Image (cartoon, rainbow, N blue to C red):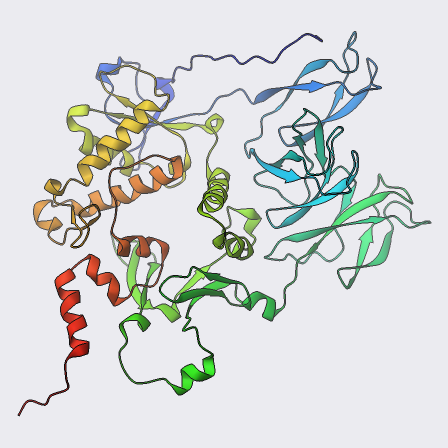
Length: 521
């Protein structure tokens, strides 16, 4: 097996149509085997693969003889592998490990100066500090790749590979949790300490970490003099929390973090607050008055159809929560957002894609098959997409045009997004109209309800289409006006944004500021 090379194989997957559940009307039904030409249009939920084992190639470490066990990291899990008979150190073997439904995320870390092979150095990932062991043959300044489970709970052993094929280990030392189990919304910081002499496994000992006294229990597999790791919650003072800001250098509005871990909009005039208070005048300044959309969930039983309400509130009263339960184990994203807000667009996009990867459902856990008729593309697509549950929108979509057999390897999906968005944003369809100052951007047609009785369903379908395109990195044909993007991002809307929707009304309002105050006799 020493000459064994890594190969990739492809297999044909045939969807079990007898087991597919069809979305629609809140019910599901069994479909019978039928040809592509007779498959009804709709969205089909295809179950995931039943094979829960994944295969990995591992290299037998030096000094390991046949029959001996050695640790490996496979799919984010630490396993003990027994060396097979006839295998020598340096040869590769195939290991089967349970397939993780949570998946892993790859990160690149640079080895600091002064760190040699085998030594550990700290890396901050997802607001938590991990200890990475420098792989053999890697020098300071080189990058190593570490694999971290996307849904980490506490301290998890992970692994990565260096550019020369070596392995780096994260979290291989015994780890414990201190007796203080307080959870911080800003994550935890990892510490490393030597077990004092005379301390036995299971016995607690006191130490000072991060300026506070904590009690740590010696783990069962640790001995005096051995290093162990523990985590402490990151605590920030009120001044440190309020110093976290998102300054986009646009329109004079800044997002500031409050002690309740929500962002609030604050108007930045560029002058001290004392001068602002002295020079404050009772006059209406277009650029100083702004509103932010607020989306609220309606109580159950309020309405038979509507589940949410949308209203405009003053920008200073708008709040945005920084804790997303499905990302970063429920810790606050405020520090990351503040750091990436000042970075170039490429870094922002890379961070955004990392957050999307944490939400996406793996292919092994099932996908969505969408069948549409080309001659009835828009209506079939809307009915199919609207029938998909919110949780299933995170799954991978596969598209198929009825009576056009083929395999969607990405090309069919691109064609579907392009054709559907072309039709939706066509002004002749009357849902959208051109901006008053930019013919490349589209705004909502105020007369859409006259041309189409189901215009609200089509607008909801458009929102799902744009969200899925952003989720799957697809390109759509429509470009929205700036006020709509502000609504999506919950940015302050000012009177200046009216120009994109109605340039004449905006110009007339601006003229009011220049009129003389003349009393009519």
